[in-house]
Image 1 (tube, helix red, strand yellow):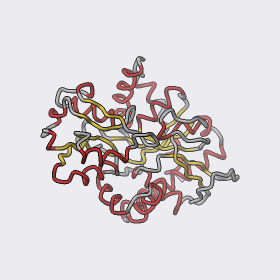
Image 2 (cartoon, rainbow, N blue to C red):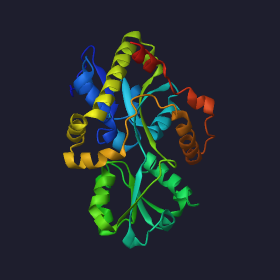
Image 3 (cartoon, rainbow, N blue to C red):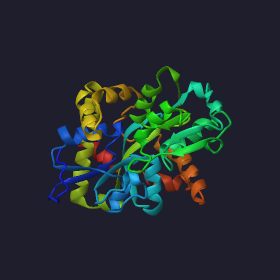
Length: 312
């Protein structure tokens, strides 16, 4: 993988959150399968337009051709950039919530009034709300303690905060959640409900970039490599796990322990539109706007690039 940020003709520029296990197929495709040159950088969908995210954790400079993010950040980006296009479902993950039994939590209903660590405006906060609604509650009934990478309260502080008793529970992505479970050991009680929420981590581009014939050809080729990478990591995960560990500066044991909780579909999920609707409604409520219609959200999903990749 070429990690240089210099501009070299023919390179495909791909941004994503390099701390996540969800990036495994992208890293493997770029490192082992895609025949062209790639630049992989930490960032997100706002980099498709050369803009910085308003979230410190994704506040990266530069412009990219492809970007990987969860559906929450994709929809936040699309609100100001309706030409965003979702091309591929890289990973899916029913988030886990871990709580301390010693804090008096034996069920999701027991979270009412408790201190829950998570990241604001993220898929994790949305998951918290969805899980609580399964027991007639909501995120409004807990004390959310915000954490975010690249701030004074980084996500990596969550496991220690749980162990100290500063938090009663936490909901987040891997591998921080796995580290949190380890930190409190037998005191941990874990909740997970894929029917309430399962993250859709997708690869995106923009309509303008897809209309560039030369660039589109590279994107089609990368999707072909991404399909092959997904098939490879499902059979032999070690290489992908090591790439994730290196990119995220993690030990391989943490990656392996977290690995079973994610799935890599290797296609564009047919259920993606249904998954976008409740996320958009949640964001609309917090932003004070009307939710997008199903037809409007459907326009963000472009299956034509995947069809080209499969037809080749």
